[in-house]
Length: 142
Length: 142
Image 1 (spheres, chains in turn green, yellow):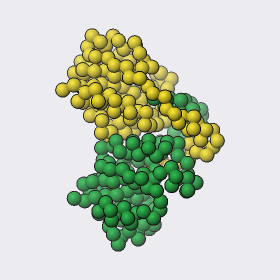
Image 2 (tube, helix red, strand yellow):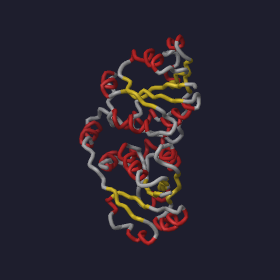
Image 3 (tube, helix red, strand yellow):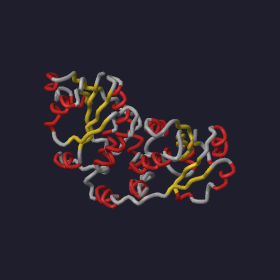
């Protein structure tokens, strides 16, 4: 069995996240995902709209994902790879070269991010005020 | 086998959407989800940030969901219930009473929406500018 491991924040979940997870899952039989905690993100000066529990719940609920665990610091990756017997470490190619040190423990794959053609249209929708984030936030009272 | 059917837009997917789908799925053995098309939403003067294909892809990828189909108009629900042999129609209780006419064809359940405690915090994050939607949109270039 080939175990794949990847990491991310997955705030405001969108299809780009999903496609990356599907491509990661396709590299093996089991996909484990480290979801960064709110505390870890704050340490990177990155504040999420959705808290860890909710981001992790969504990633856990996806068909390509077998298990989610918290990513709490930069240093845990070697331990994770060993603990979970990961065969392949996957990350976006904006990190190319940064995780080569894991090659001592598993295969390291940097996946190409593909440009998303409708980003411009989405920005226009927001800037034109035709979609208001405040309406959406109010609608999250589910 | 009990078939459950529900409908929604599922733009900017969040844990409230997931919990509603999980509760709908728990009412039967198979969950079918009508995702509203962009054209249908425009007719309601509602423009989405994410296009239909991407919203449908995310809902389809969820473990509690068995099948997704397009919701193109207000009138199709009777046909859908018949075509898919749905036993239970589920919708949020903001629609209470509005779909009682379906009781001729299946059970109709209005699920209570639960208030989400962190909405205030999320609004503050946006209004304080500590989370910028534009940054997120740029990051969707995956």
